[in-house]
Image (cartoon, rainbow, N blue to C red; front, side):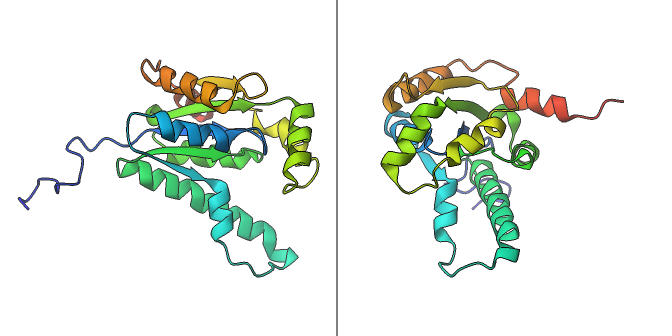
Length: 198
């Protein structure tokens, strides 16, 4: 390899990959949209859900006094894994639950804001409760408890309602949005909100 030149599998321009950031409550339909996005996106992309990180953790029971720390560290690790994949030039579809305020702040600190498409995935409470009952693998009322915080920041690049559009329709809307993304992005505007004033 010539010194100073990238390897054959490294991008020439050093640009980071795009992060399509799906945020919504449990059972709102994020993973279903992500599956359709991977099927229709033009560029090779990875779907990296936070649930996959929780699933990789050891199956042994975590003592109650350590549970909060273990979960916090898992979320922090997830954010850094996404940032690392994007920094290496990979396109990533992540599905997330911003049900704690610090999670958004952490992502704003880590991600390149112009490379993030922030997608609000909405679903009415009654439909969320119906989906939870149908799934049977989530604590009853989990999604309803998350609703107040998940969308509290109130700012997205694009939003969808999965009670009105199916996963493929949502994915097509997101893909169409990618061809003409406005600036500043939602992440750029949210970062500006955080910046200390002098």
